[in-house]
Image 1 (cartoon, rainbow, N blue to C red):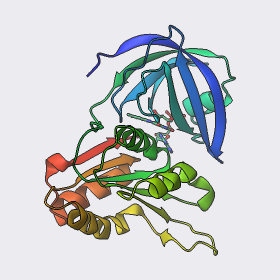
Image 2 (cartoon, rainbow, N blue to C red; image 1 turned 90 degrees about the vertical axis):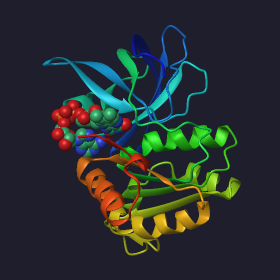
Image 3 (cartoon, protein in one colour; image 1 turned 120 degrees about the vertical axis):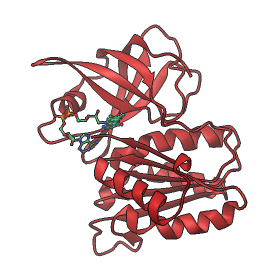
Image 4 (tube, protein in one colour; image 1 turned 135 degrees about the vertical axis):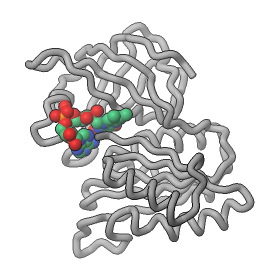
Length: 244
Ligand SMILES: Cc1cc2nc3c(=O)[nH]c(=O)nc-3n(C[C@H](O)[C@H](O)[C@H](O)COP(=O)(O)OP(=O)(O)OC[C@H]3O[C@@H](n4cnc5c(N)ncnc54)[C@H](O)[C@@H]3O)c2cc1C
């Protein structure tokens, strides 16, 4: 795993991918590759009115040897860092420190994986899926994504394309506040983990699945406890990253 370093990044492009989520594409100013493992994050040093503050963001894209990487930032009400990044003009340069983190999955890992993410918590899971699929992995890769409303669903077209191209990819969305026309799953992700995990165990047998969970603490804790205590998943097979 690469040692973290400090480097400058330039904002190349930015797009709103949901009403409260801005996707930002950065590139290292020195042209060096980021060299992260899928699932890792970077610290961005933000020059806020109260002084420089660091905020962590998961790298949403797989390592591809280039100097570019993506993040996706939820605009937190009254959150100085996330609002700064939502307003950051293209071309701006920031200081970054990283890559950091042990919430990783090797792209050639043959284990069946259940990815559970809510909101921008899906970003490191997306990087893991992109990396595994680019390497031609045949391991079952199942993503359970949770959001409030249909408009909050992130990377839907990309995930649906993965499903069409790869029979071992499964994509499930659950909405906690579905509209009347929604025909998919509803409720919190926790409600759907047991059934999906049992199916994945059967699909991936005899190799036991790993579970990767990312998002806000309440959800992460609930899924971790569920997996370890009620579903009997080996604690070494439950990997978590929390944002708060
Ligand atoms: C390892 C790691 C990776 C992270 N990756 C991401 C990422 O990819 N995308 C991202 O948007 N955030 C991510 N975060 C959270 C991010 O670092 C900031 O905490 C977040 O942007 C809020 O900062 P702020 O200055 O706007 O608000 P602050 O004033 O610092 O925080 C206000 C409150 O916002 C809440 N909060 C933090 N993150 C979120 C969120 N995503 N959605 C809703 N509420 C939140 C917390 O409860 C916090 O107490 C990550 C955090 C960690 C530790």
